[in-house]
Amino acid sequence: MGMIVIYVLVISVLVYWVESRSMEGINILILKRNQADDLESWLKAFQWQKGAIQSNKGDLPQYKFYTEVVEILLGLARHYGGQYQDALMYLREGLQADRQFEKKLHEMNLGTWMQMGLMVLLTWGFIASAVFVVEISVPWWKFLLIGFWQALGLSLLPLLLRYYREQFFGGIGKLWKILYILRSLQQAPLPRSEIFMKAGVKDLDQVKQKTLESLVEKLKETCQRTLKQGVSYEQDVFSLMAELRFQEKWHFELFEKRLTVIKLGLMAIFFLPSYLAFIFLLLSDLLALM
Image (cartoon, rainbow, N blue to C red; front, side):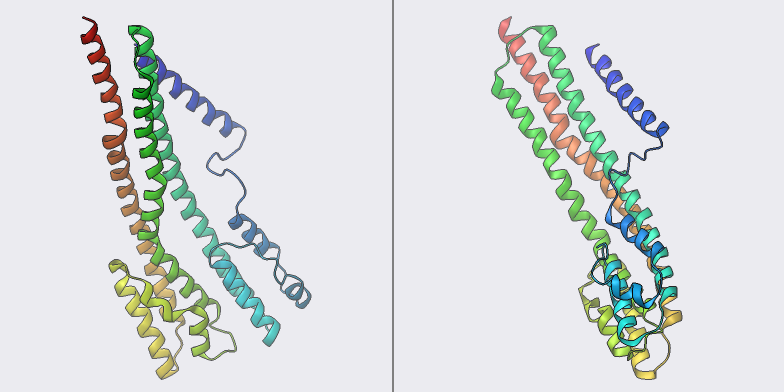
């Protein structure tokens, strides 16, 4: 009975908190304004004028590789002149898509933490109500052992999330950087070899994910054909970006499934045994009193 009351109370508090924040027009998934928001605001406000190009040197918000691409474009404008407004607009579209992607990841991570936190609350709620109802004395070190085991499980969660994020999306991030720089510099007054160097094409061998092998090979072939034949790579880059967007969505689904396995594994190893361990300790003490 005590467990049911605690469970209903926790759920009611969570629902009330979410609803109250929603009525105030506050997105609970965005804890604070981040660098992606700052960079997008900068891109919206930027006017492509010579004075603006010079005055904005060094004060760009830092966010992933997007800042690096903007700095390259501004550097080209300072040295060679010309405007790259179209490239900035295309970069801004990519930034918006990246923000949506990060928001989805944040939602998944937040949901995982809330589930883990709820498991901890339910476990200790049950322990507290059982000790109060049964009125037996349990050694403090047993509570400490249960708490340590749950804390160990919680400490593993961010490590696993960081590891699998890199496994699923690290290579994709490198490819996005290369493709966006190639797309932005296609009209730049630079030799194609220098553009490929700025884009980091030589780093393609660092992308080790087997699911991205075909895309990496296509990009290498495009760069080699451009250098040998002098043809434009624009159309190939567009098709590769569309393919990479599809791969990103697929990897997101795989990451979501892996996250489900992580949650079930942590619950089975760290939280359910803690719950059962206390029941075993409780029954042992009760039998000892009989």
